[in-house]
Picture 1 (cartoon, one colour):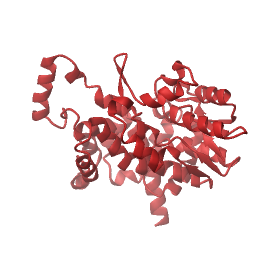
Picture 2 (cartoon, rainbow, N blue to C red):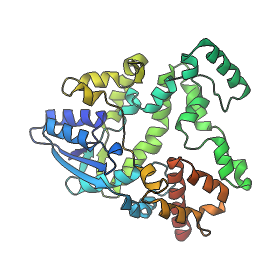
Picture 3 (cartoon, rainbow, N blue to C red):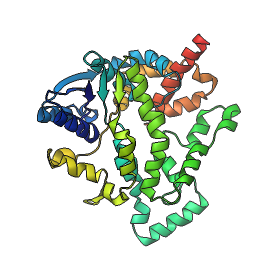
Picture 4 (spheres, helix red, strand yellow):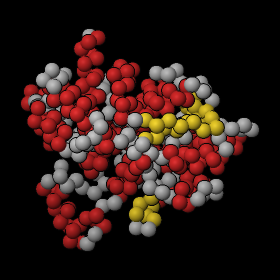
Length: 353
């Protein structure tokens, strides 16, 4: 067995304890990109060198999209997380050396590490002058969808959705508008269950019930099983969550130098072995450089336009051409990925129906 090592804090702490327990080098596996701003390979290498692991690295290039039809077929449903591609490749690489790996998945949810938590707490109107706060309160009552109230579920939607309700309405053809909803019944139910929690604990609870099982764990499970690789997630262990659920919010997320910082306790642990520059750097995550690939002039832009603008495209049955154009003309690369994946999935569905 071995471990995924992204270079992030969660996988670092997992590999750190693995290496302490074993008397031989842990096999570690990392994926990166030529686009340096999306690659944590230098940090992964730093961890591997510090801990003495047997480290393996691979670079994902734009032509990686050629394997998208295979990924779509194995996921079996529309899946919105573009990091399924690098996860596919790191799983493929690891499967050539080991049968099982550990991963750091679940650490962001358990220890409040996501940027969305920091963004949710950084509220410029409320944290600014009093008149701005009062003005926003009035605006939130008059235009709740545009100015959601502080720490509300509507505000959370604004941070996690690739497309807001108005944009989705413009994208879908009129006959499908009756199926569009501004809110999710499931999210509403979980939010009510967490009603007595602190704002950050509410978000952690929502992610535990939705994002973690439906995105993160689904992504890794499908991508790894394509290559018959078993992935185990120690940070999702029940005993760890029983403990993390009792950690006060301000022990995990607090202001450091006028900016919000998460995973405070985990960072304290890692500071025992790693430098502060490593531990307290800006969070990156396993992000695919879709902006560089799909943006105007990007290496995959022409291919993307040909697929989505095609008069024979599957999505043209459901979406307005003007709506598709709206997405392509925007900087919403997450939405572009959603349309591309959906197009491939619909094509595969109709072919196998």
